[in-house]
Length: 149
Image (cartoon, rainbow, N blue to C red; front, side, top):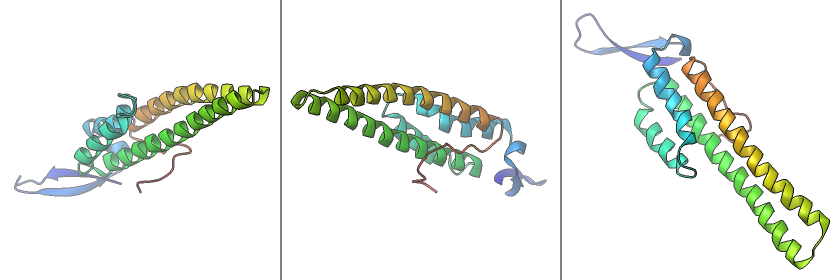
């Protein structure tokens, strides 16, 4: 459930009304969607940009808070997976310099292919998350480690 703040009849103070994500106003959905879309900003700075944005908007609604946490969890997880693939690629290259073999060539090439494939999957997954979020649905990224709960 997400909280929306409405002014009461007198206009003096705000009251909380519980809404499902589908009933949210479009501006709340767009704010939540930007949590996901910022992942496509400058590589490696995207985590910092998304973190700053999430810290700024997380109190506007629980839907924006949830979307920001999911986006940050996915971005951090993706960077860890990407670093792992890069380390495997570098290790295969170093080993191949010492002991040339077809196995190290295959491992290195597989690591490079997985890096490029994961970048494509990252982009597509973020686009799907943005679409689902602006549609008012909560999106949970697959294979993302839940650092923020």
